[in-house]
Amino acid sequence: MSSAITIRDYKLYKATATLKKPIADATHTLHEISFLVLRLRLDNGVVGESYLLSFQYSPEAIRGAFRDLLPHVKGFAVNEMGQVFNKLNNLSEYFGNQGINRWAQAAINIAMWDAWGKYLNQPVGKLLGTYRDKCSIYGSGGWISYSIDELIEEVSGYKSRGFSAVKIKVGSADWRTDAERLKLVREAVGNGINIMMDANQGMTLPAAIQLANAVNDLDIFWFEEPLNHQDFDGYQSLKQHTGISLAMGEREYDTLPLLQLLQRKAIDIWQPDLLRIGSVEAWRESAALANSYHVPVLPHYYKDYDVSLVCSIPNGLGVESFDWIDPLIDEPMLVKDGFAFPRLGAGWGFNFIDDCLTEIKL
Image (cartoon, rainbow, N blue to C red; front, side, top):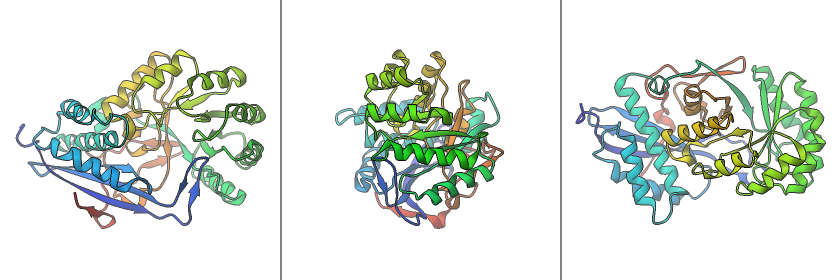
C-alpha cells in the first residue's frame, strides 16, 4: 500500500478567468484573475490537484517557491501530510515561514488531501468527519471601482440567485461615499438579506469609527479588515466605540494574531485563508482555537475547499463565493437557496479542465 501511494512527480499550471475590466478595492487594483494549479501524481497513477489565487502578483516568486519545495515531497506517502508539512517548514525557516513559501506549502498539502481522498474513493469532507451537510454562502464583490449601476446589478443578481447575504467593498477616500453606497445596496436588496462591508485594511481608525456609526441603521452584519491586520489595539478601540461585529483572518499565516484579537475581545468572526495558513490541519487548528472562545469561522475565498472544511467543524458559519473558477472546472459547486453543498466526488470532488491549463516549466 505505501509504495502505491508514494508521490512520484508533479506539474504546475496556470489558468486564467475572464475579467472584462480591472476591479479595485481600497488597497489593490486587479488586472488579472489567475490561478496556479498543482498536480501531484502517485505511483499508482492517482493525481491530486490544488489551486491558489495568484492575480498578477509576483509570478516568478511564487513559481520559485514551488520550484524550491516540490522536489522535497517526492518519495513521501500521500497520507504523510504532517511529515511533509514539518519538512517544508524546516526548509523555509531561514527566509521565514510566512509568505510565498507558505502558499506553495499549502497547495502541496491540499493536493495531497485530494489524492488521498481519490485513492480511498472518498470525499475529503467525509474523511474529516461532518457536523452538517451544507453551509450558508454569501455573494462577494461590490468593488470600489464599480459604478452605482454595476454595484446594484451585482447585489441584485446575488439576491435573484437565492443568496441571503452580500459583501461590499468600502474604504473610499471619503467614508461618506461608502455610507451612501451601502444605503443604496440596502434599498436594492431589502431587509431580508445580510450586508457586510470589507475595507481590505484601507481605513484609519477615525474613519472606520465614523463609517460604522453612520451605517448603524443599515444592520451591517460585520465589518471586515477595516485597519491594518496587526493593529490589534485599534480593533479593540473600534469595537469599544461602535459595537459593530468585526471579522478578520485572511492575512494571517498562523494563529498568533487570532489569539491577540481574542484576548482583546476584538474579533467576532474568524476568516482563515487556507493557502496562507498553510494546510488543512493548520486551518482546523485555528478553527478550534476560535471555537474555544465561542467565535464562529467563515473563511476567506476558497469555497471549493472551505465548504467541506466548514462542514467538518462545530463553529462553521458559512463560506464566501466568487464564481471565477466555475468555467474552468468540471464540477462547479452546488449552490441553492443561500446554501453551498459539499461535492460528493472523491477528493475535493472537482478538477480543472485540461484545455484551460497552460503548463509552467519548473
